[in-house]
Image (cartoon, rainbow, N blue to C red):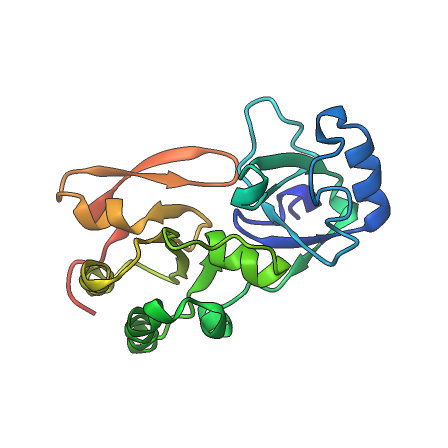
Length: 222
């Protein structure tokens, strides 16, 4: 049985027990007076699982939260006891369409069609995720659209082709990761651009790994 602190995967959303949050924040003098942080959990906002830093105690759950651009766009990292957190369902792409800028409409429709074609349920990440969760102003005219694409098996090259085609016509940068069955995540752009013999960076919650692109992709179209 895996320890509780290792039961979560990178990008998982977690709710925090308010008392534990207050205790951890009280130990961080550098966070005194930082906007939103003290009341983050009381306001019903989750944190997100981040990668562990070298030397961090593996018994604790590494989490983070980003502040909105107007408050410095600071990324705050914390480590919480596993008994203080519980999982929250991810926010699916289709759940936040109404919150997107009108100029994104055609791109969003194309992405929804691509997802249905492959039987996938992409999840939100980045600015749109945090704006939808907090009602704070994370999005701007120059924001990327960040999506996570969970895949149960090898990554079909035609999925990457579809993302690249949509990205070429989009008014925003289409970014994000393919989430692999083992919990690792690979940037879809890097995987799409990889030559047959290239290795790509795969990020896990506790390590980075280089894998051959051909080992991640299927050999033919899906």
